[in-house]
Image (tube, rainbow over all chains, first blue to last red):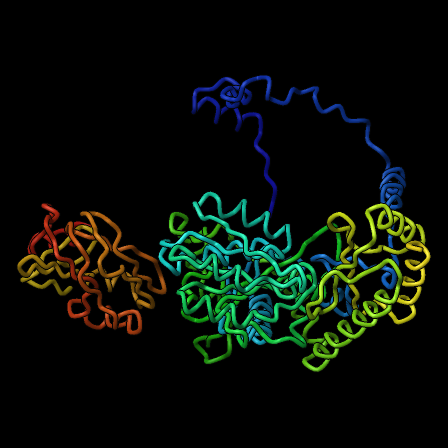
Length: 450
Length: 126
């Protein structure tokens, strides 16, 4: 696409047409104190390439990079192995530089990749139909609530959110749902198990209850063992159950949302081939039943045949995207996280079905090994008793002890976990750890809490 | 283009059949031919109260998405529940495939008869 700037004559002609003397005059409606003055951007003289490189490298070197086997941080962003093939495949210019596939005749590769992604998401969740991906798990969850809202013809406005939902997801829900007048009520957790309290969910089921959200594994890493009951209770009361999974590798060994009776599932797919890097780019996805397909935000790619009978892919459903009918759009999403989703598709195809199950089991086994070792340490307790996947909460005797342990572990090269509450820490263990790295971590902790 | 004599018509290309205090609404043969293959129909809920000009639902074809509107004021008494599963009936039998029945108290005074509507679509295409 050529970049053709306006000439001074062009600008003069345009200003004459609209009766303005200068470009500045176009901005008169903005009070002058808010307008950027010409001399406000005091920029230094440029740097040479080698100077610029040195400067940028200096900034980059101030990052502290933790060895993968010493990274025990999770809390919504998980450090998993990323096969090198992903970067090579996704880095191909056909994928890397492709624009959104509005024209099927020139976008078959991109469309097929999205179609396969959707197929994989349906298989992971057991549900009928998946969109092409969205910004991230948290925004996808907000969109899923809006889907439920439309499905119930915008009549019910109470959203039941568990207190053990990822706090950032909770914050995004609050921000996104407020303009629609939806109310969030929080279901308590069982302080012993770390699971959502079924009794508390029940107490919030009123005629105005629209949907109930269940995150499993939840923010504390605990599997919601009553998820199936909660889904059944909700459906019996005409409330839509929504399943959220932030650590999607867990689906390799725990029941799928469809098996648990959920009609809508939201996944964050960072775990599947995407690095943990300053929170992004990540991608979310909504997978649901056929009956909700028309309310599903985003786009869906479908398989069809061209006039010669060859297999072909097209943007089948995008009718609710903002660019088609803006005033009727169900969401402000106009595209999808194609490249991040592609990474996940490539990841899943490289890992394979058996590999995926194995990966889950490895995460589970290593995390349980870590928990057992930590439990033996005097001064450390495991906060919740519920079944967990690859993350759990450890509690220290006091805040001071935790702080000492945290900073000391960091000095030893560990990213120890995420400090949580007064005296606890969220610890995640993935396949990137080894028995040995866990032992070193536990030994260090033992020293620091003594 | 098929325009039936015993019906009333709107500028948005809906047909209206008035029987007593019940109005039956559909889309015209002209509308379906302009839209092309219709693949989706969204209908209102029975019991919804509507005014003249309110959106009743959505008709979607492979080419376009269009709302259809109420030409009367009243309450929706029934909807054609077969249509969401067989939207192509709107193409094959536009005047048989009704969308919504409304028990009405008022109607749009600008409804056209068959002759006026035929002229209207002719003008629109000039």
